[in-house]
Length: 184
Image (tube, rainbow, N blue to C red):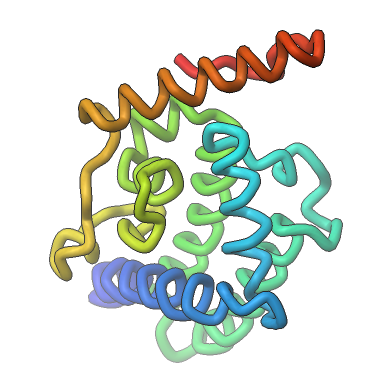
């Protein structure tokens, strides 16, 4: 049963280091497979106040969501392979992979929920510095390593939200469009 807490620790560390060094490190290179994360996912999230419209589509399309599913499935294969040796660690790690996808998807379909329940992930996408706050499901590794920077609820965030809402309203008025979603 020691595998359960060990899996929570290893999952948090893997989430942090993959997000920081693979999805952002290699992902900033537009020629890399991992570029979907920074260039597609972050781009949509920034343009749409945290919403990534790929999550409205099937996870079996070759977009940012589909590539995320492929990467998570690839991680699940070796984790599942060690089940006979470390069943508690393997099962907990597989749960974490599933939870990561579920929570990450919800955060990009419901920004208000993300801001309340995953403020560190909201901060990762919406703060001026997107190279902080690497934890998605939990912030403990960022806190431990000093990369947890608070943005949600600050004066800066409130001013940025008001500025983005005004810019969006002006664009929509100029185009005669209705708002697809409203920042609160």
